[in-house]
Amino acid sequence: IVSSHNNDGYLLSGKTNVLDTVFVMKVNLTGSVLWTNHYPMETLPDEFQQLIKTTDGNYVLAGGNGNFYIYKLNESGAVLNYAEFGNFSGGQYFEEDCNSVYQTNDGGYVMCGHSDIDYDGVYELWVVKTDPNFTEQWTRTVQASSNAHTTPYIEQTTNGDYIIFSSTRLDPS
Image (tube, rainbow, N blue to C red; front, side, top):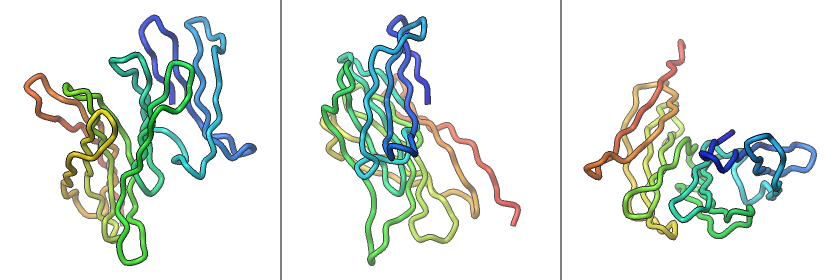
């Protein structure tokens, strides 16, 4: 994942199989590395899906690997806060992946992804809204069609509502 931050350079994220870590790297506009941090994968998703610069000058990264993960990093890459959102029922985790994160007008965050709540191959859109400290405020699910795999993106509109953009890939079976 690569995220551009105006004249501030770029934030990159990926996975290193050798070190079994997720890395986040900041580079300037000419590509020189400013810093690189590695984070152990046991506390992170396999990879982040979206990186954003927050209004306070820090970074928020979101992703998923069975659950939704959201991390806030300072300008040097140190973890300031993190949270994990997911469902656990009957001894099984649901299959959930976070695809996007957006900072809301109230300073909180809204994340959107997909979830297969009952492992039936039907993926629902799942939205989680948090306050600025990643405390869950509400969640919503939107039923998708059978065998649909979605990759949603969410934003807040000027009137405070939310809009979800999503692509769907139907399984031919």
